[in-house]
Image (cartoon, rainbow, N blue to C red; front, top):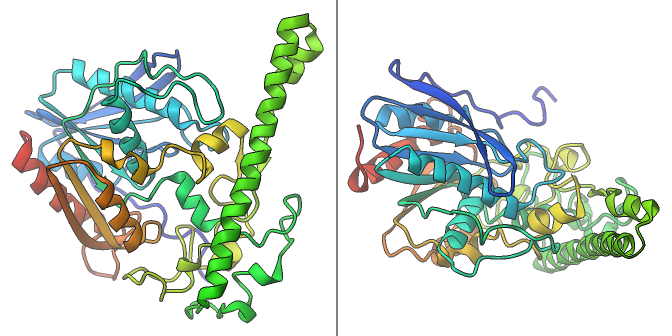
Length: 408
């Protein structure tokens, strides 16, 4: 192979306007966590656009210089779990978002607009839903108390969704490999569910695979079953920790305290096996062959890189379980009622056309604008020599902002 497996995931950002002023800020959340953000602004900016992702550092997102050039300030913020899937709890990430929004409100901007790209979409949809509710969730899916009811959660003035996928859990539900026969053996394979077996319809890359409807039905059902089994393991681990805590409170034994603190880490092998990434006839679009992680899912599926590969039981249930996580765009969509722009990328390898239709249909915003531009999921160009998806999206976002909010 002449190209590394993960090529194309990271795009360079352009130059920021010379007048850009940048400052770094450390914030404390209502539950005492420390998060950091970068505020970049240009003279006269009265609207601020917030970029966040539950897992990634977006300080150098390619949209930042394009938005600054359009006359808005840009806030890029970490969650407490940036670059760390191990302990990513979405309910805590909402508290991180809230701290940033309180900070921006206090800075005196006329308008605050959230911009959720990729996994930032479900994060911000969940935030909008909870910010507008009087009866916010009180615990994580794993049962841990969370201080959403006590937090100030300013409702934004608008929200932009750029190539949002249905949520980390729903994304993993679609790409987890159900052919894993033994959760302790990454090479174990059930032949009847092997996505990468020619007998089941796979073809040598980059030729498109072709799977029979019967195989796909069995495959999707088995994906559901595998996630349900991992859910059960996560809940059992949490029950053991709870039992140990109760025993410690009752008897005060150090051994029980140790048992309550000892981490149980869940390893999930093979999570890059969505049939749509190798069978381009499924929910067709302008996407190229391959997944978010590269052009060879048949190899990447067995490698180190992938969604939710190493996680605590609490994080699995809150973020990575497509059956238990509340950070589900379609579930949260009705609670998004502020002016909304939804931008679809026509070559998206994470949110497919049917996904986008479901997400758009779920949104509760009376002022809803939808559009699509050519580009890949991370905003790359579909073809050499044409504008990038980020450039095309920035033009749509700028026009939409200019009709509703003040620009410098």
